[in-house]
Image 1: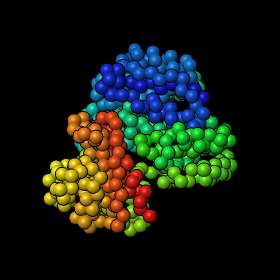
Image 2: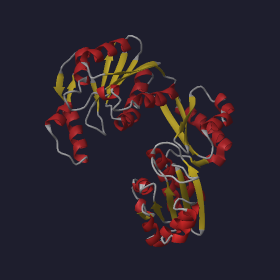
Image 3: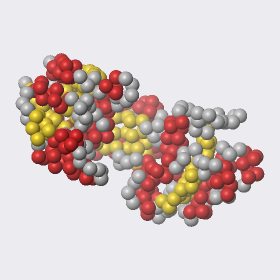
Image 4: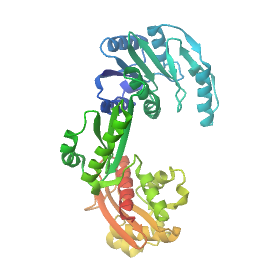
Length: 413
């Protein structure tokens, strides 16, 4: 099965926004053996939209369109598709109810532009967007399908997984067609080495099973996917393959569920009955932000000290000034004092501390921008690391955050 992706938006063509939707779609359709014929990015222009849709439907059975469904006048995808497929624009009560529900959840007021999101072509089947106001539209023509989706990545991704992919499978295969996934979170091995290690495993996988490598920077999400019409046989195949995969890389697996690192850390803390705090200099509270993004994190996370200034490290975390003078503020000894200081201050069993040069300015002799010292503590055990993360300020902060969480995961029994 081949498909095309049409991404619509003037902001993409001027470089204001980068297209991430095409790559995401390709990664999530490849496990089913579906191939992308092409990806194209076009402007918010009626003639361009109609011409691109016509060309795509002449070549493939599935066309996936993202973007141009906002409530403002420059978003014309809906009207262009209505013109191409025929019918007229009508006010749909079910869509209006969904829009109102989304707006209420966001605690914002409904306005006329938002209300107009409930106008849809009579030539489409509406798939309600549970995480946004722009409805998803399913069109059919000559046995082929076009699905128009929001351009906002998290909306498109959520609804693709929740509704669009299952509907496509059902439409082109059968009612009892099913898909299943098994995810392993892996760390301590780079993607190429992991692929070499699993080369024979992949060669012997049944043709309806597929292994995807999704590196995240410091860790890898390894997803085994299967599809078919025989549920019992698919379950047997997935169980056998999952057990075989686990046995081959057991030392690198930190979780066999599709979870974020902060969720994995939270699970370990809860299971062990441990409490946790952070002392953050170069990461500026980013670790605490991720931890508290998890509902229920108050059961183990007590708080954080964002000790950006040296005197906060000295006065609040009791880092000795002579240690800073001897080793500099970006050093393993300072990180160790920080982690013990915040653990004592917050009365927690576990803690993370970070200090470093996130850039673009700063750095010191022998410690260039990107140098980060991380200390983790669990009960009486304290371990510190010095790492260098190349790249932009945001990348340094992100990688330091990831490594810090992974280090603490490692030392919790």
